[in-house]
Length: 272
Ligand SMILES: NC(=O)c1ccc[n+]([C@@H]2O[C@H](COP(=O)([O-])OP(=O)(O)OC[C@H]3O[C@@H](n4cnc5c(N)ncnc54)[C@H](OP(=O)(O)O)[C@@H]3O)[C@@H](O)[C@H]2O)c1
Image 1 (cartoon, rainbow, N blue to C red):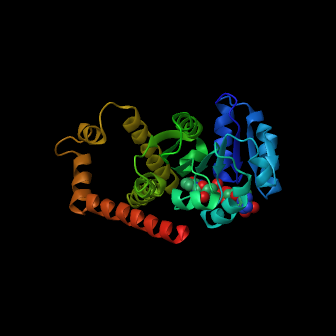
Image 2 (cartoon, helix red, strand yellow; image 1 turned 180 degrees about the vertical axis):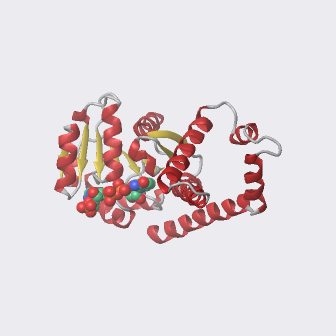
Image 3 (cartoon, helix red, strand yellow; image 1 turned 60 degrees about the vertical axis):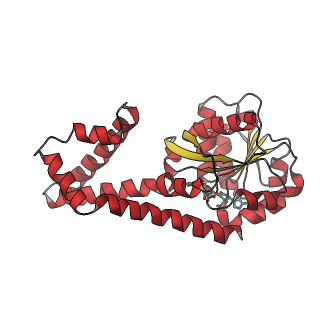
């Protein structure tokens, strides 16, 4: 990221993961700042990465090229309105808060170089995936910088329209919980078949990890991989048939659509 100065407003879980990822990638700690009212969070970051820390957001954004807004959605308006008089026209603002539209951010900040980002929890272990949407005022160089920054915690995908952020929230933002639910259900089924709970849990978790790694690394898509391991009249086919007869695909579709609708509702409430 060269000499790009990055300031994090809010030094909680997400900011700490991004800062950790950036430092691991070799970004000079001199170029990273974090601002938060919580002194304990700031001390932890200072001790771990030797970055500069602030308790005053307005001082932290001075001369920053990129400002990452990493506070809870409920306090975003207040934080933005307080920052507004301290911003310059060229600064890039990246919001990782769920549900706050670029229009609201732009109104509250009095700025227009805005990127919205929806990361997910595996970002905490640098294995996340983030959907990014840039407003038309963001320059090509700023898009590149945002992509580099978010790649510190995982894969980055760009979205052409802001509405798609709700779909990203429904697929990958809330997605880790769907896989946790499946791991829970498979563990419980294993226990019912007589496995000790800890062994059933290990089998379910590591199967999920192995399958996800195969799906990410293989040139084949998920359907082809599934068909490859599903022999006619075999054990896997028996399970897949039961899933399909129980309406599994329809259920997943309904669940993901529910998350997207809820994301839209929350966005409306938070942006009003
Ligand atoms: N965690 C995820 O997986 C995830 C996924 C997608 C999106 N996000 C979004 O990322 C954002 C941050 O999430 P998080 O999990 O990192 O939350 P978090 O751990 O609660 O971090 C937010 C931080 O902001 C601080 N803060 C409160 N008021 C502030 C102010 N006026 N100025 C500066 N900092 C202030 C909080 O301090 P106190 O604790 O002292 O209040 C806290 O340290 C949220 O908007 C969330 O929607 C998170």
